[in-house]
Image (cartoon, rainbow, N blue to C red; front, side, top):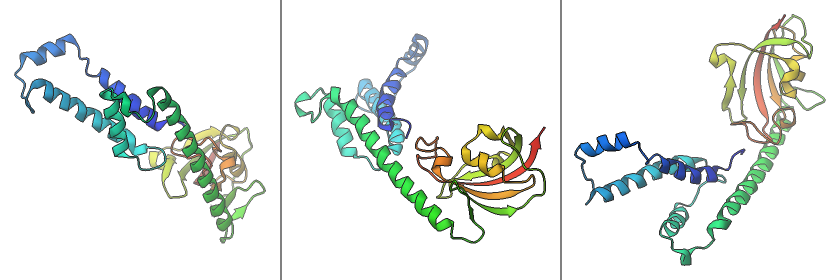
Length: 242
């Protein structure tokens, strides 16, 4: 989302290559010990080992390939043509490859963001029909699990809360409960959805909250949170910190 995944995968090859430049001391110590040849010669064995190392690293990076499943055949073809300098077989020139990657990733990001927005809007429309769910003027939705009887915090107040944040598929992306330590912050220094809902919660309350993307991380997303994501939180207001 925020990074060019395919570009990072390609860069990883060059980063990995630098690891082959070991120190003189390590090289000397390795040369002093007898080496087992796995193939016909030492150079063949080393070449195979390098390929194996690059392949393992690239495979890991390609797990987050933008747009879904990548083509192993096309990847291997491009790599082979490049490393053998078979320019006559190039279907694109190396100087245009980076621009193509960037355009491809941007197009995938836009498509994913549009799909996430549609999914979120459909969820909120259905969710607001459920018993106990209240929808505010801003579009934020909440359900009271426990209603406290303490004071209501103001925007400039610092509060202590326990919370668990989930994506719509149930994935937990953050949780003070799992860490075993409440979070403390000032209401006007967090996402708008939190600022709004906490001003409705007396101390001692526990709410289930659904935050539209425009009141959360919007079109930018944040880490595992995709752009245009609706977020679900279970929030317990423990105290207003003096």
